[in-house]
Structure formats: C-alpha cells, structure tokens
Amino acid sequence: MPWLRPVPTVGDVTTAAQRAADPAGWSMGEEVIGAFSRLVVARRDVRRFRPDPVPAETLRRVLEAAHAAPSVGHSQPWRFVLVTDPLTRQRAATLADGQRLAQAAGMDEQAARHLLDLDLEGIREAPLGIVVACDRRASAAGILGRATFADTDLWSCACAIENLWLAARAEGLGVGWVTLFRPEDLAALVAAPEGVATLGWLCVGWPDERPPSPGLERRGWSARLPLDAVVVSERWPGAGAPAPPRSRLAPPVPATLVAARDEADRLLSAPRSLGLLDAAVDRLVALGVSTEGGCLVLAAADHPVAALGVSAYDTSVTREVAMAAVAGEALGAVAAAGAGLELVVVDAGVAGGSVPGAVDLRAPDARGDLVHADALDPASVKRLVAGGRALGQERGRGRLVALGEVGIGNTTVGAALACGLLGLSPSDAVGLGAGADRAMLDAKQEAVSAALSRLGGAPRSALELLAALGGPEVAVLCGVTLGVAGAGGVVVLDGLVTSLAALVAVREEPAVAAHLVPGQRSREAAHPAVLAALGLEPLLDLRLRAGEGAGAAFAAGLLRHAVEVRAGTARTAPPAHS
Image (cartoon, rainbow, N blue to C red; front, side, top):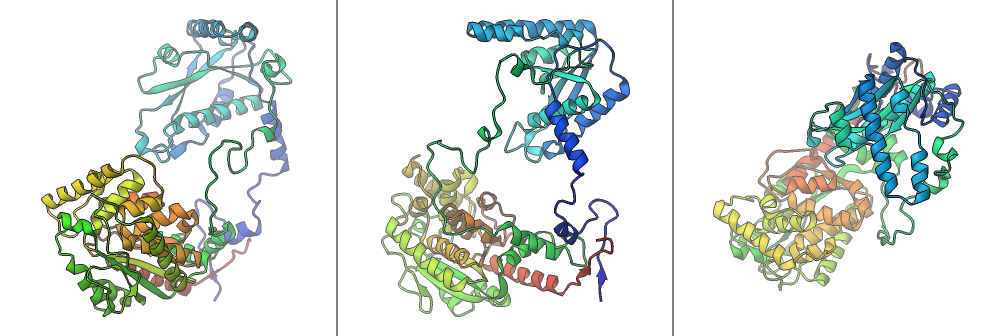
C-alpha cells in the first residue's frame, strides 16, 4: 500500500526526495541574487552625513536586520546603544580624535598624514550614533560552540553589524564604523556594566557623500586584494609544517552518507525517530555493512603493573576468563552469542603460556610495568598491531566487529595511556576499576603518575605512547580496528581499553573514525574524555562493571534490531505536490 508521508505542519515540510530532485530549490531567484550582489558591492564606510533625522520605522527595519544575524549557539549577545544626545556625541568625538592623534604619533610621516586626513566628523554630524556592545556575561561553557572558540560571541556581534550595514545601505542610509576608541573608554561613555564589551561606534544617517568606491581605496590607503590572493586550498601554503601522513583509508564520500539519510526519510515515522540509533544505522548503510555474521574479538593479556597492588584480583583471573571464553561460557562470550556474534579469542600475552583454542598473537614475556620500564618495545607493538590488522581484515569485510578485552590491571594501563594521549591528570583519569578501594585507588594514581614522570614531557606519537604506557591487548585491538576499517567494516567499541585502541588507530589513520560505533560508556573515569576525543556519543550507558566486550555485544544486538526495525517499517510515497 502506498503510505502517505507524515508532513509536519510546522518547520520544514519538504522531503528528502524533493530536496534530492532540486538541490538548488532553496534559491530566492536571479532577481534577489542580483540585487544582493549589487548591495554588497555598494556598501560603503560613510564619513559625512546630513543632519536630517532617520525615521523611526526605517531605523526599526535596520535594527531588525541586525537582530536577525546569525549567532553562535543562538546566544544573541549583541546590544545596540542608540545615542542622539549632542553632548555624548561630542565626548565620543573627542575620545576618537585623541586616539587618532596618539596612533599617528607612532607611524611614519606619510602614514600619519593619511590617518590624520581621515574624516571623523560623522560622530558629531550624524543624527544617530550606535554603540554596538557584546554582553559576555553568560558562561561560555553554557553556550553551544563557545566553549571551544571563546570569542564567537564577538564574531556574532560582527555579523550583526554587517547585517545592519547592508540593511542601511538598502534604505539609502550611510554607516561609518569608528573603532578609534579604547574599549573601556567607550564602555564608560554609555555606562556599560562589567562583562559587556564594546565593538565601536556606528555613525548612522543620510549620507552627505555618495562614494563610488571605498574611501580608503580612493585615498590611496590600500587597495582591495584579488580574490585568489585570499583563498587557500586545503592547507596554508609555504607554512613549513610537515604534511600529514598519507592515509591508506578514505572516509565515505558525502553522496553515500546523504543517500543513507534520504532512505531513512521515506520511513513512516518522524525524522530521526530512533535517535542515536538512526545515526549509527545510517553509518552502516553508508558503508554497506551487514549486521549478519559479525563477530566479537576478545583480546586477553596480563600486565606486570598488577604486581604493584593496583587490582583487587589475582592475575590468574585473566587466564580463567580467557579459557572460559574459548569454551563459550564467559560473560562476554555468552553476550556475544546472544547478539548473534561469532567469538574470536586472542591470546595477546596471558601469563602461564598460550591459552588453548585462542588465536596466538602473544607479546614477549619480558615486558615493563610502566613505572620502571616501557610496557612493550616498539618492535613488539609493530608485530602486535600487524597481527591484529590481519585479523581485522579477515573478519571485518563488510561486517560488524565488536571489541572486548580481558586483563587484570588494564584499567591502570588504560588510565596511563589516556593521560599520555589526551593530557589528562591522573586524578581525572584513574577510576576504581573492578572492585578497588580507596587505598588501591591511591596505588593506581601513584603508578600512573610515576609512569608519566618517567616519560617526561617529550612529544611522542600515538604508537610510541602505546609502547610506553599501553598493553599487548591494546596493540592487538588497535590493529583489529585498522584492519576492519580497511576492509570496509564497522567496529563496535566496548569500554575504556577498546576505545583507547580505537583512538590510537584514528591517530594513525584519521579515516578510521568513520568506521566506529561507540557501544557504551563504562564506569572508568577516563572513558568519557576518550569518547569525546573520538567525537562519539555512546549508544548505552548502563554503568557496566564487566569488560569482555559485553557492552559492545549488547550494542551490536541493538544495532541489529534497529536495522530490522528500519527494514520492516513502511515506506511512504512522495507527496502529491513533489
């Protein structure tokens, strides 16, 4: 039956099919495009004004255009102080003249003469002055986009000024932007409170000049650069920075990503009905990955750091769990079976000799405890990563591969490696692990701190840090991640250790990031920071204590179910008006 697509009565009423059929359909037409181009080219910095007042309705339209500017996080930080009082304008002009003379005194004679020739009488002559201010009192952390670029509120205000300027030009008004003020002096002039920054004074009124070209160009101050001189392709030329390493992988092309989302738009449901699952399923569809016949790779290894009292369990537990996994009876093995995943157990260095039935990728027995020596030598890391890559290539062709690990003491290893890779402090990275108490937590922090001190501050690559602070199972899982991504599969991550393995892989091959699905957020303190570094939001947050890939297996089962739900949901016919 041709089901009708649910069409919202608010917001965007178009469908993906309509947008695909006419990508340029949002255009406002040649007439608007031409008018806007003429408007942009005709904008001028006006310096001389008529005294005639600006009608209130005209000013309102100009301010509404400014208020419609884009703002980061929809913060709308701009404030417009309208100044008509002649005395205030005179005081502003005096401040600007003083700064002009001060700047000219520091220039060579010719440049100083150019500066002194600039006309600032607009501050006195224009019927209206507008001091544009930025209210910066809101916490940057609470505004989307400002926690990373702290000055985006100022940029937003600059966008508002540009909107105001263009709207004024369309109305026939002139605008002159004067910044020859100390910001604190201008703030004091209009009694702006602490935390409100000023961006200059705008002279606004009917222009007593109609300049055909920008004033500074006419006066020989400078010339407009050709467009090609300001456009840089990909990387800054001639910067001397080393080129990024050549990648053997490429992320999915935009067309495949959009095609996956287009197909989801045909479902008889609201867009993004499945939330995070929709984004994960889109990733599988874009990569052409099947949820049938996947596997869980469970890598096991012991760690010399366990001898420093950082774990509540004896190292013999690693072997017990690995052998139970081979028998299909360990928790992770049972979870994998329930999710329809084949189990591959890898012995990356379990104490006491090879684990029967496991894939043998054992690291050398001579390994360091992080505190006194590196965990692994570079040659061993290279061999372990290569072995894991081959396994990932074999098992990951177009399939899901969940990752899991077993290793007493590896939460300490994970915390140390997270500190090395992300610059975290031991107090922020070290968690309780599986059953540690306060004294053991202190021992873990001391071990991590000592390991970091031993390394010093010299920069190291991700693989070098893996050798110094990691473990054999991390190296193997890093290789598996690289191999699966290279084979076009998708890796479902479990807890901290598997996510660190993926982070090292992404540092080596950035395109690997497109092949990752975060299964869960574990209880380990450093795990959220590692997921954030990967740009991943986990599907599950169950406060799991188990490793062994159990969380990844649960997430893989959820993904499989989500794919089945999407496949079985009715498709809709295009709307009649398309």
